[in-house]
Amino acid sequence: MRNSRVAYPLTWRVMDMLENVCARIWPASLHRLLPYLMLLPAVVLVGLLVLGLFQIGDASLRVLDTSTFLFSEDYSLENYRQAITSGFFAVVASRSLMGSVIVTVITLLFALPYAYLMVRTHSSGLRKFLLVALFLPFFIGQVVRAYGWLIILGNQGMVNEALGLVGVPPVRLLYNYPAVLFGLIQYMLPFAVLMLAPALTAIPEELESAAGSLGANWVRTFRHIVLPLARPGLVGAGLVVMTLSLTDFAIPAILGGGSQDFIANAIYDQFFRTSNQGLGAALSLMLVAVGSIMVGVVFAVFGAGTLAMTGGRK
Amino acid sequence: MIGSRSKTIVIWTFVAIALILLSAPTIVVLGASFTAGNMITFPPQGLSVKWYGAILGASDLRQAFIRSLIVSAICTVVSIPVGTLAGIALAKYKVRFEKAIQIYLLLPFTIPLIGSGIGMMLVFGNMGVLGQLWPVGIACCVINLPFMIWAVTASASNLNEDLELAAANCGAPPLQRFLYITLPAVLPGVITGSLLMFILALNEFLVSLLLVDARSVTLPVQIYNSIRSIITPDLAAISVVFIVCAGIAITLLDRLVGLDIFLKSK
Image (cartoon, rainbow over all chains, first blue to last red; front, side):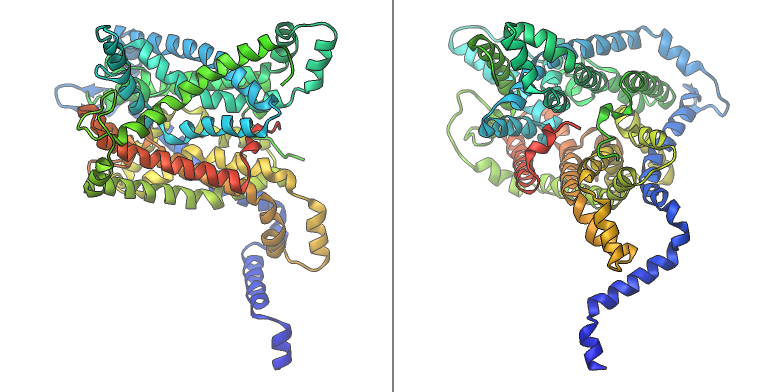
């Protein structure tokens, strides 16, 4: 008896017990359904979002009665009509759209050389430095970064104090459109570089050497080898940057100071300032639609693998 | 990098500007937190750590920080099993409607944050649980879940079916095979994913802003609310907490799995 207990240690007994429990709960005959069981918790969690979208949809169809401050029982499309025809929302929407386009172009312009140097450098120290410089702001969060810009660009901020030392009167650098775009570019750079880097890694360096040995200078090599091969990465990164900056809230709120609202700020105000939940919901749903169409275009053109979810599939 | 001097100069010019752009806020916040004056001025009025003392005494900031930690912990604890299982299922098994499921699981990335946040605000509001911390944790988990699944599937190339068959051949039952063969293979991905989940939840602002009430503000929301009124150096000092957390996360990530994994092509 004692011998058998030594030969069959406690951990094995526990494992056996657990195996039995597992076999009882999920018998081998259900083996083929196992992956679906494993996916179930994730599907349920994301289901919260879908449920949320339905509730937004429901709210968007109810009109606020301004005399009683109650929402109507029956559905109508009045909120959407109001959202589309209102001049204020048209201004906000065009400001956000134009901003996201400008931000995307400038971000990619800086992200491409950054990712290129990071991927191509032979010095592992430099690569690590560039990676850390990228991840640090990425991990610090928008509010703290925007706060840093407030210190630098504010009316009594570093730039203005420095200008004051050389006798230049203070310049208003904050709470305007360029300040918001500037903040967004800084916010988006890590995203763009991290999406571009794998695409550049996939381009063999020999191709560039070959182009060089055939007499192409680096500008031509870049234009005819690197850019075309990096195109999927560029388009993917561009669309991610565009959707994220189009829908951003914190940067326009903090660096725009209320005068440079983007769509997300307008939605927030509808919910928490004017308390017109229906109109806010209609705006949210329209923004979701625009965002989904943009991502849908990426999927249609490049396949769902663009966002790096298909890795490791055998 | 290969190429001529002009290429080096052009590339480095862009990179240098990008580096300044990326690092300036961090460095300035760090510097401002050590100022001796009551205002943030340039050039600084001398060095002191008095603002760190001030935030240690401020119970609202301390409690907001603790709430942020709780939210991140909930988010990470929920996301580890959920994301790991889903990632393994997608990478290892042939699943029907795999494309559709992938697109569905990417919804948190494709739906704009303000939409996700307001949707969950309505859902949790109807459940009557707004103002508690666990809905915020769950919400942070939902919006960043693709990161976790991505990290796990990316490390799934380490999965070796032969190894599992060999284990089965030696008599290992399913659970044992899962615990001793499958799980260790994707462990680097799980570590990467959970670090990302934790740090992103710690920094999450917009979804927190929508889901918290006055008594349950998290630290980013607290900082945002204070920025609105006045800029004082104690905010810089509390912001340094985030910088330190980010530094720890990067160091851990680098030590445990190496930052280079983010450069790999699929």
